[in-house]
Image (cartoon, rainbow, N blue to C red):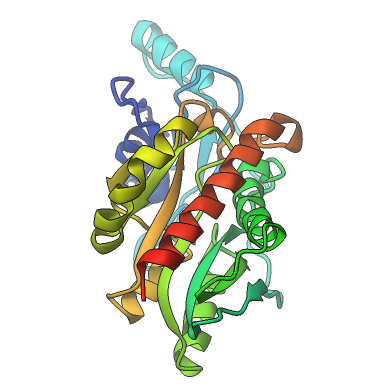
Length: 306
């Protein structure tokens, strides 16, 4: 057996950078190890916390390479295995997996929209995904994200805002394991000759919002609102909007501006793909602040793009 024990880089304030530098262990670990006659792979969970909660996620295989078992253990367990190996040498480890791939079943995206009064044929999409890993409930990943956007739509309607563009809220299915919902949405959008001027995704948890990541055109215009955003703590604007579910829209039309809500990320990987990702670990006030931030972003997009 092989233990892949690359830990998060603690010097990164934005923990998604640390996640990005470690996630390849989980995604490709079985492919890397199999050619060396390895029987199984154990990986360190992708978290910056030291606890006993294992975190799951996507793993790739290749048909040309022997498919060997791979399992995540908690960060504390990975540290313990590494420590005992350093003082005792080779260890004997037993584990039992009951994973299986079930046949596909029909599912669907869920969509709600408000028609625009000036550019009704031009769409601003926003949303998240409502599938999750069964280790937890998917409360932060991505129940919080879909409620950010659904509540933002309600807020805009509640205050009587009349959007220029059609605002569409989408709950995508199957983001975690295949992107089927996002790919079908983009396929149908192209088939129906729809024009998406922008798409916003919230898929980084329901924590305190800090700002937004945006494509370049929208970013330059959004900076005009930065002083208005600062008192609400959402003035951090950075280049690089996007998300798994809205990425296919960009491939269809390079002019579609992508946006991501950026919450504080310090606690996200305590719950990401773990049994701790439950409703009780979502803070109501933080969730509401995120929804309000999304509503603000949609207003800016609606006003600044044609």
